Amino acid sequence: MKGAIVFFLIGAIFLSLQLDSDGPTDVVIGTPIAFPDMPVNDNNRLTKEGIELGRRLFYDPILSGNGTFSCASCHKQEFAFSDGKTKGIGIHGETLLRNTPGLFNLAWYPQLFWDGRSNSLESQVFEPVRKHDEMDVRWTEVVKRLKNDDVYRDLFEAAFGTSQIDSVKVAFAIAQFERSMISANAKFDQVLRGEKYLTESEYRGFVLM
Image (cartoon, rainbow, N blue to C red; front, top):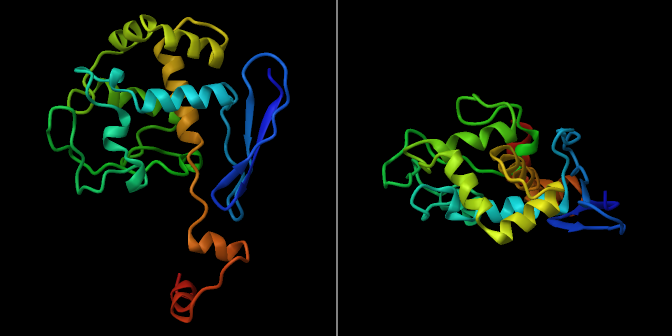
């Protein structure tokens, strides 16, 4: 284990401290003010290398049937990792049943998807990839493509200590990236930190909550 990277949230800025040694670099994310402690998955600890791999996979259309569609095709950063549409649009241009949920602060969500059918970030990764109307590709094909990519073999080695690639490691890496997406710098967050004050009308709305 390569020491630790400790993240402290100051506004939207993470400061890090890294200790040098061998292996993946552990990441600890400081809990924002008024947030409960972040739930952790002991089987998928956060690492710098895992998050970086997950980010690359998230933006890579290699995870789709025709190689043109990525997770980020629906989950766009400029829309809080949603897409700004009433309902999502899948790989074949079909309108999906529900709109695309945002992906910030997912580490604190006990259930995922609009119907709550998944109870972990790791498990939710599997479904959109294999669904015909979303990304439409078999996981065996995804793994085959990744195994044939020299860059990905090196990235999996750095993140998990092995160049052996499988669907579980793909899901774990993407889950690490998603777990690192934290939004805690809205005006209300700044008020909680004592950096700003509510206007009179904002305060009236607050006391009605």
